[in-house]
Image 1 (cartoon, rainbow, N blue to C red):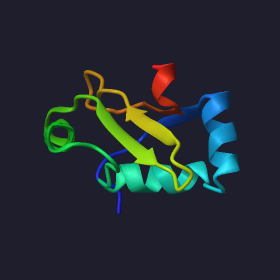
Image 2 (image 1 turned 90 degrees about the horizontal axis):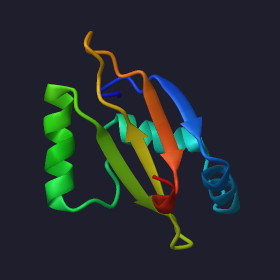
Image 3 (image 1 turned 180 degrees about the vertical axis):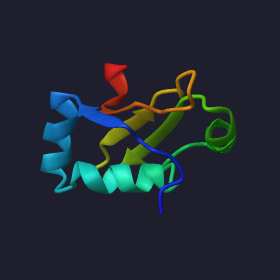
Image 4 (image 1 turned 180 degrees about the horizontal axis):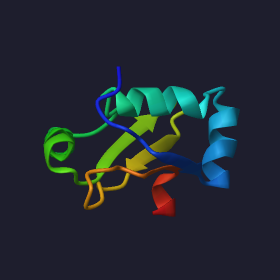
Length: 95
């Protein structure tokens, strides 16, 4: 069950290659992200995401694949109308 709308989804080419190498569908990470499974974040970042659900700020998740590689999912802050319009899947060094 989604806690927020992810809007338009984009992914960097490197992130897509890494996910394919890990036999992981982008949709699986998007589902985890939108349901509030923030992945491998510390408590401070988890609390920041919970606050972002209320105030419309940016939401960030990070997932470590079985192979040890890390991928990030970022949903941008809501606009003036409260709409979150864009989510990106990328590798840590790409933002």
